[in-house]
Length: 87
Image (cartoon, rainbow, N blue to C red; front, side, top):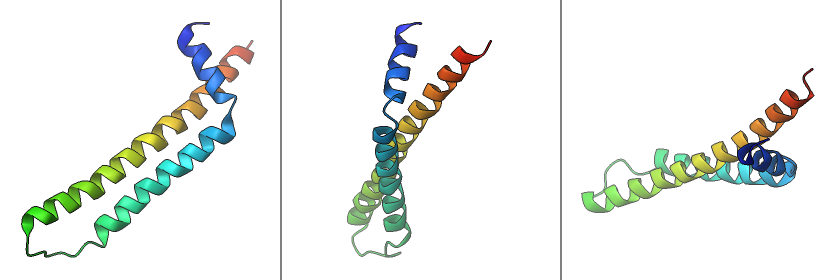
């Protein structure tokens, strides 16, 4: 077992923690998405609008990365367990 697989399996033994972080990431992603969709279409100051939209998209991006990372940790941990049990 290499270091990467050992680290993944150790992380996968804490599914509640990974699931909580996955839910946090998805919450950030959807919050950013809803803010982006509900933003006013026209703002007088275009510079302000650019920064506002950039912030919302960054919130979506950070949330998506957190959610994807922890989802992959859970999935890879289960995959490695399945692979080891296979005859």
